[in-house]
Image 1 (cartoon, rainbow, N blue to C red):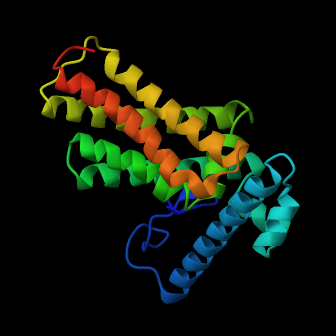
Image 2: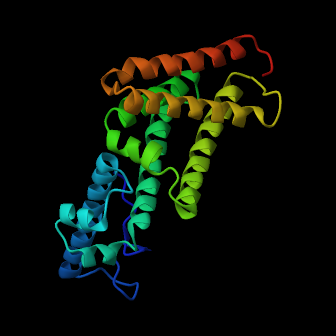
Length: 236
């Protein structure tokens, strides 16, 4: 999991002392590592319990017990259970974006890179991190305006990433979209298909072990449609 070093509601600035100058002492660095370890332990426990038992059935007491700390210590790091869910959404969302972005960049701004990014979503993210998928697609839905705000922010960032990648591919192919909305509409459609396929086969059909060929079918279907548009050299 990607850590943003948030401890007790703030960003940890690394090896600086409280006055903003000089390196921290060895004991201060040790305490910092211990805080980060506890912080990540709480997040991992919450992720496991939210995915297994559901967000609403999971109590702070259960999270504290799995994290091997007191409930009071838990509230030192997070305001409440909603705060935990929000932080998980942010970190998992960043992980998805990093996974797709890395795969796309390895192949340059090409349709092959776009295809590989789709494969990476199913094969690197979904298959290797089913608990994170459960948090992102199931447990974060319908849990209040603050959670929804962070879900939308994460979704907007991912949409921006995929749209920008699609535009770069189209420019390399000397292809122009029909309207200013075309690239975004295609992007939203792609993300909707990926989300639905992952949810359907991981949670409704319990076919996670077959997700690789299923995901490749979905990605190839989408990329095949884009290829047809490009090869015809016509507007969408």
